[in-house]
Image 1: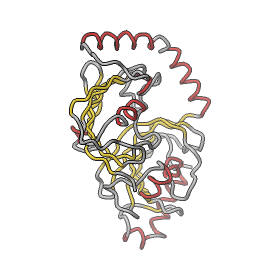
Image 2: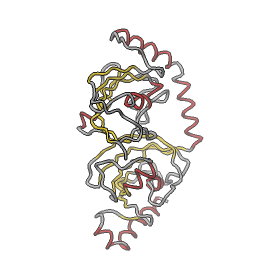
Image 3: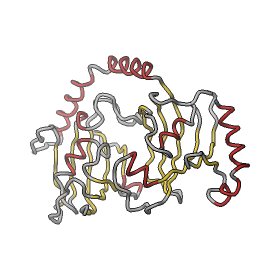
Amino acid sequence: MKKFFLITLVLTFFFTSCDYFSKHTGFSKTETGIYYKLHIIGEEVNPAKSGNYVTVDLNYKTINDSSFFHEQRTFKITKPDYKGSIDECFLMLSKGDSSTFIIDADNFFTKTLKTSLPQFIANNSQMKVDIKMNDIRTEEQYTTDKEEFLKWIEDFGDYEKTILKRFIDEQKVDVEPTKSGLYFFTVKKGDGKKVKKGDLITIDYDGRFLNGKFFDSTKKRQQPFDFVYGSELQVIPGLEEAIGMMEQGEKAVVIIPSSLAFGDNGSSTGIIPPFTSLIYEIEIINVKTKK
């Protein structure tokens, strides 16, 4: 399969040379319209299959190479449900491979993510996706690894509760948690325009552990986050709940227990450990009502 992939790269170069030079220099093109450029060839020869669990480094960029999402994730590959889907990109890679793909931006956001196209990407345009395939596991291997990991951390739940209670006591937090366990503090009031489901909102946030150490910050990246509020899998449940309580222009600090964050597995990147409470400082920069 690896040799076939390399031969395909060469043949595609020669037989699509006109399109090759006029569209994206250095890239080859699949029959479904995806452009690709292989940077690193891993030692494994078997590409991923539908149903496999993969761990990948993902970097979503505009066609002009401006990065707007960069993270490592572990997930189950599904069968592509339309031609040119990003799922096709994963199925072209073996463990250790690294490649850049150019895909249709409209289809990625509306069909794959089932959300609206961000303001910084034009209609009927393309986007780049850098993918590094770190690991490929069958469903059986993934289940076994997960069960072994859960046995190792089964006592962490009580430990988190102790740490969170100590933090609340030390900081003299004088607000009651919401029904779900979220602590919410308004730092700056908004202009009265409430966030509603379906609104396209722009936020800035700092994410910290209870010890004050940063793990993520749109402010440091100088890149606010745009998303459609209420869309599935856009933000963790704790942020979803907190943002739903806020107004345009409002700034708030929230303490989020792991049950509303990354739970007993931690984040797919490995940055957030299992059973870890988090602190977010959120500011709603803009609320655009969907008409």
